[in-house]
Amino acid sequence: MDSTVSGTAQFTALYIGAQIQILQILDKGFWVNPATLATQQLNTLKTNIQNLLEHCLKLQFFFVGLNSAEQCAVKQFRLRALALNLVYIVKGSNSSALAPCHHFLTAVEGMQKDLAQSNLQPDSFTSLVFRELSQLEEHKPGAVARILIPILLESKLGHIPKPNINIRMSSATIVEPSGQTDTSLKFTAGLIMSVPFEAELRHLIDPSRIRLKVKYPDQKMQVLLPKVQHLKPLYYDTTNEESQIGHNLRLLSSILISHQVWSEACNVEINVALFVPEGDIGKRKTNLDLNPSLLDLCPSVKVSVAPKPIKKTL
Image (cartoon, rainbow, N blue to C red; front, side, top):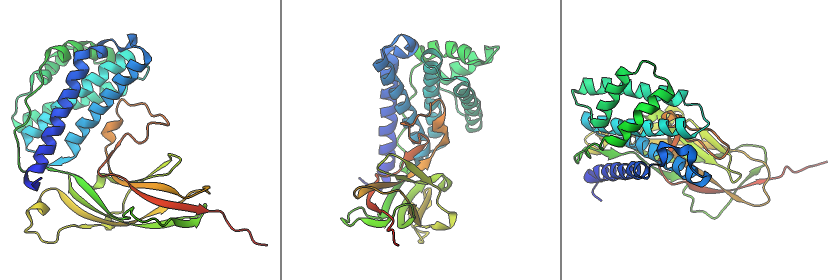
């Protein structure tokens, strides 16, 4: 696909996909009273809402070149998803709703400022939220959730933003390690091995959000923050139009791997992700919920590693 239209095509596809997701959740109606659902239905609803929130985060943080109207459209859509999540937590979860409620109210306040600065009108959902919250005496989770239910049921989805050829989607390409070698990297168990790492990062909004993920076969994960000095310009030709859209960088670093003895060589997965702490709101951390605040920018590269036992000598 032509790079000049691929960004807006990916943005539009993701936006439509998110709209379909929220319509499916709203149409089924389970979110209104999730406490009455069977365990499997409740888990499905929870997963669907989490996927929706992840889609919203990608729309907000994966794309550069959005104009103010498009940015506000994305934020208003995410506000709707946050409202749905808040209702679900209040009505059908044992988790505390104080943090999600505070985050929702903070998002509402930020939305008011963004719309005022951009001189834009809110959509039907956001307008009703502004009006009802202004009349609410106490902004407690239960009270906020009660006013959100009819608003979510009645308000229509906003229009899909018009195509914008200036939009680019953030991406990462891992150059090294390639993951195509059959040779296992060997090191003494318990010690540290350095693996050279190179990646091309394109169209980033904020390079400080970049993280490296290292996932071991036992599902343990390390999240590494690259040093600033390891980030170099990807394009030195300033006349290149692509170099002017977002931050385009080359990451030259090394990843330190360490583990105890394995019975045989296993794959360690390495990839590049965006750190999005906004994604932690309303989620309960469990051992199976691995770093929900990270959004992968590329597929993982597998590196075969074989920690060897320490040789004992007399």
